[in-house]
Image 1 (cartoon, helix red, strand yellow):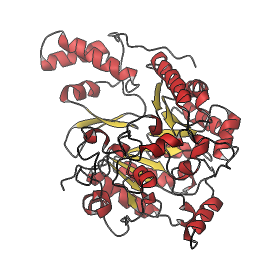
Image 2: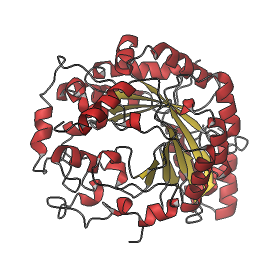
Image 3: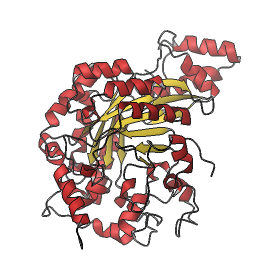
Image 4: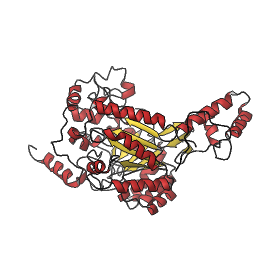
Length: 371
Length: 97
């Protein structure tokens, strides 16, 4: 198959993280994935990525600040002219380090905040970090490094999007993203806590729209609706294997950050293949490219070139088949699972934080006979 | 910090536009075209747009940019209008300031 080049590389530098967010995008079994690529490995990958057509690099984790070689990695990426975006919780970021990153070629910081309210934020993160994160956001703005703030929004904080937008403006962000929780991995475990109500979503969306208009030219305000409430699926990753490569801390290459949740895929590793071979020839990257893999209703749907059948990980998680239509789509035969999830709201189930301990428990449960 | 409200009004000729911090212009080796890089996108620029952006160095005023482009591409008031519109839209997205 003739493939267009990848434009963006997501480098998950580590799965270590001081936060335990209820909706973390790392795999449930991250605790057993402790291997991490070396500085040299990553430098080689950045050079291969740039040669392949990648323009943008997103350094993420876990918490990328936990890598002691982050300055060297930034310099290595800049040497290949990549645009470098650091995605961080900010916990542990000092002025001296940020200065070193900037000198090494860092272009932009995307900082996560969990809420506009301290108690709410610390509850979701499972750690008392909100105040420190605000101080870090102020430091970034003071150092005139362009800053995007990202709030994952869900039932517990959607009613405060107005406060989040005000906070972002006060902190000097150039852009604020209010991204509805997407139910993969940890978020799927905690869905009964996090599922927004349609009324809540509509109110928040209207507030965000008003703010976007009011703050035009000062700060970009972007709201992303939860796909359970959208009726149509999201064009996940802009299509599988169409523009993005994700590399996990141990060097496994994936078309998206949740792809490891799909059983039966053998992920290629950058230690044993070049990025070019992985992108063009690996079975994983070709598994859902184009349209031939599609089943009905996607196969003949006029929307297929716009939404690519939605999210493969969500199809696997909810329909048990990664080649099925995304159940978020109203035309999916499994759409009822999404409809019923809208009303399965509960505060009575204990939330599951993303900790090494709960990760090991999940691995243990899945490995037990009959478990 | 008091920030001046910027809106979609046409930018004035004395404005000296420059790329905002965190925005980079570079040639895409894949196709030789110029792209504007910022965290959310790699915006493909056509030849005219790239020519405008290359002149946004913070020293030239909008009027001077229009003057240079007119000298290069010929006459007509279309260049003045289109340049102002393009840069106004870019400013709205905080790509130039």
